[in-house]
Length: 419
Image 1 (cartoon, one colour):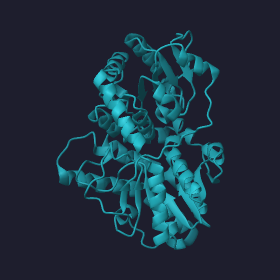
Image 2 (cartoon, one colour):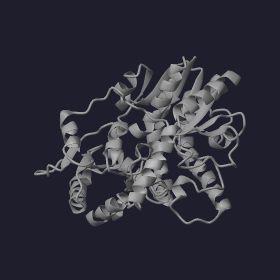
Image 3 (cartoon, rainbow, N blue to C red):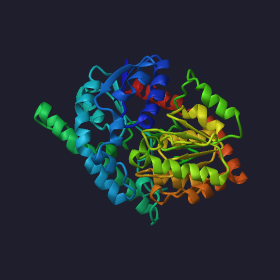
Image 4 (tube, one colour):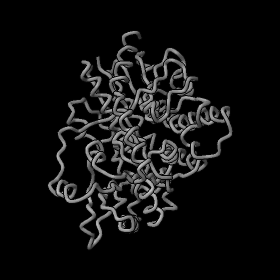
């Protein structure tokens, strides 16, 4: 039986689906993963069938329209940003559609909702697998509203419904255009698929820890908060330079902004970070990511620049993790049991920054637009508080006790057996 996983976005978006694919592969299923061509080598290294989606996702860092869309820092800008992504989304639909052909089941990211309609056409099961909670609940607001004003339980539920509608509107027009081009009509039952996923006959998986957002009691029984899906690259080996740096002194502070760092501000950002580390008396490992950090002339021996390193390997060796608050990076830092300083740039990152602070496992987040060397230095000091460190260790141990990929795979297997 072949299960196709539709993954869209950056490496942080894609890795959880690779982890899930491995769990399904171990259970005896054939697994195909559709993802950006940027991740061909990574996906092929695990022995999956790989369907290459055209386009290099790192190009987002250099495309002005997409860069603007991905830098939204309030709900209104986010709505406008999602609208900008429609044209980009249209170019993905053909690849996502083709990737589903010959499948016995489809597991799709909320940014690949065409999977729902292809499965319907092929008369095979589909499963929504989301890296963040998006099923309506009265317990807390939707992530894009999480850092905004709180107006009670009814408001909380309405924000989730609105968020689902925003996500659907981003996909609706591109899917409609593609389907009309291919079939001269629209898919059957062409309505918001996210609202339909709440019925008891549809399986929805949320790759989030119950210790970060506890499963709400008002979710239907078909919606499962499984725990995070971590991909551990056991065969990765650090460079001699990185090993020596780690052994040369106390645990350093990690600073990296993944795919959200702005290459146009790389020099200024790096100078700011270096100054903050000097003020706080800390060593640092700075990850360049997609160009948000860069190497400077005459850098101190207390600073090491790396392109990247697996978070599962690196983060437990850090004293503090300074990051942008992406869902995957936040999860890795929490599992490592290391305090965070979240510098949210856009979208749901403000929610993860606030949640880290609420859980007592990191400093108060600093929005990227308000970041200064002085603020970052103070936040690093706050994160190194003994109480914060103890809370981070305790939460890390709880998250390590979950096995989200196994839970999710077993739920998929049970669902398919009963379908």
